[in-house]
Length: 161
Image (cartoon, rainbow, N blue to C red; front, side, top):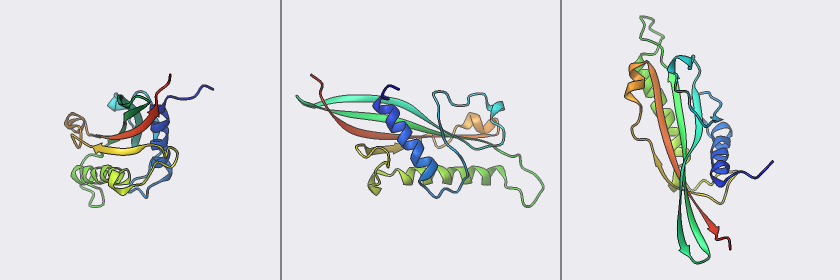
């Protein structure tokens, strides 16, 4: 099998962290996919966590060295249960609160100030995290919580001659 592109290696390292790293408030198995679930009717009742590559940039630092910046996207999608009269059932508001907390847990796990390197890709540094907007309002109108976390990474590469 051919070696994977660096951005794929980073996405796989994020996937590994999600599936083995944190003590998450939600139960899930993340997948690395090229397409997320756009057909909201096909979501079912499971929590969907998808890792995707988002982009890359390169900047020449010296004649022999480049700084690479990559973005990896983590998308969380969950069909919400409608409000009910059952006192044990969570309201839509409470469900959204839970998944918003889950997004924060992931952001905290990858926080660049925490200094936690990726277990499977130690040569990358987290340079930023964004969750903006915090959720997709159009998805909520369809009773789906849909949120994206973008994690920025920096690596260094010797120039090829």
